[in-house]
Amino acid sequence: MSRHEHRSPFTVGDLLLLAGGAGLGLVVGYFAAERVGRLNSHRVAGALERWRMRRRRPDEPWTGADAERLESRVLDALRRDAALGRCPVRVRVLEGGIVELSGRVAHPNEVRLAGNVVRAVNGVRTVLNHLLVPGADAEARAVPGPSTPLAARG
Image (cartoon, rainbow, N blue to C red; front, top):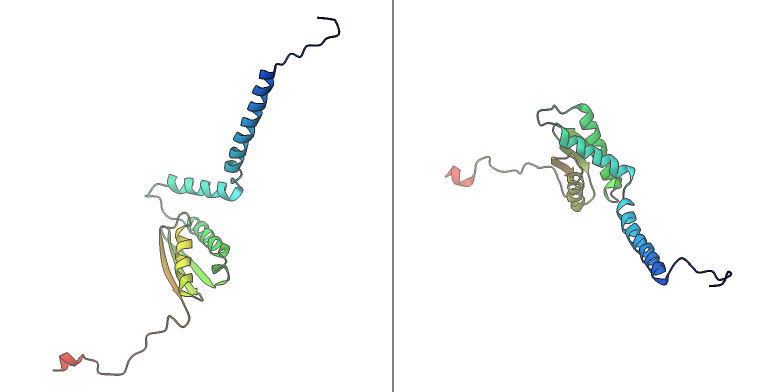
């Protein structure tokens, strides 16, 4: 070997191994970013709230702060929905995760949708859905007629 010849310390195998490692790193990074990319402050707050709810002992009393947090999450979920966000729905949180909905919506499907949206909120145990649809839910009216059935009158 002459003084001016320079031999590379890397072989073709070393370069292929390096390229394969870089490719594997890109693939792993892509999938890790896909999983971690979904992590945001809303999801972290939700996870912490679920952890707090699980940590609570069954004998611990339901507090007003618990009710306020749950009401806020329910209202946020209803406002995020395109159909329900414009409806005047009132939310009332009763003890132990029972949520009562009242107000009016435009279509019977929105009654079911509101119930499903609220049931999906963490911390909701029961939904009392008292939403009304104008035109479909009419007040009961007394029908003129005898107060006793015909068979009972003999």
